[in-house]
Image (cartoon, rainbow, N blue to C red; front, side, top):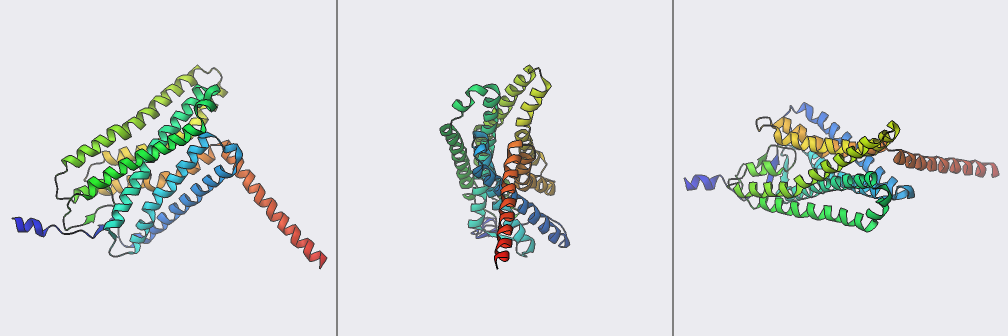
Length: 327
């Protein structure tokens, strides 16, 4: 019996990312879909960061947090999308042991950091609406930097614990991960070890990290709604809701997808993969669109940038025409 168990174990050097169980003919379609979404993520989030950094009017706590959100979305989608696209063309669909460790660590780091940052942004909106006169004092530059740094710190602590607990487990010789990236839950399923301690650690992390961020968001919006209901004018209520609707939309998409994925029974793995797409690729793609389409300041800053580009193009053409006339 012991020989049989040891034969099922081996020194793991790589894993197999099974990906989507579809016909090979659909791999090209999925590759093009991933490529399109990833291109939109790069374009949208890089543009958002450039707009925020170049426009002095956007030098406020809200846009400081939004710029960091774009940075996080850009990088954690980059941890997943390129490897998934490569595997659509690869027969082996393998990822090295070190690559899997890196992917899990970075993804956990950025996704937990985003959860904290969304809670910070909810608190920022609460201060802006409930204490507008003290907003600039309470949300100082120093405090904003500390809140962002704290988000990264807790993200890093969570990521280190998750990665260590996952990759100290012994794995079966069958290294197939039924997903398109190295997911912590599915890595634990191919482990031959008792998962009691990893499950306790995961529950502990959820209790001290995920739950508090959700509570901060819910309490902040309860306070915001109570303030809004006291505003008599309909125009005033619309103005307040417009400043919060973008953030609320982002929170709903991200947490809705995560909760849906963990509620799905294990007998529907393909549905779980689709739910994972929502927070790994769809959310980073939608965030800059949501904030730019529903935000007057961002749209105005974008118009300025586009206007400057048009003026520079017209100026270049004018100089070329003048040079030709002189000749």
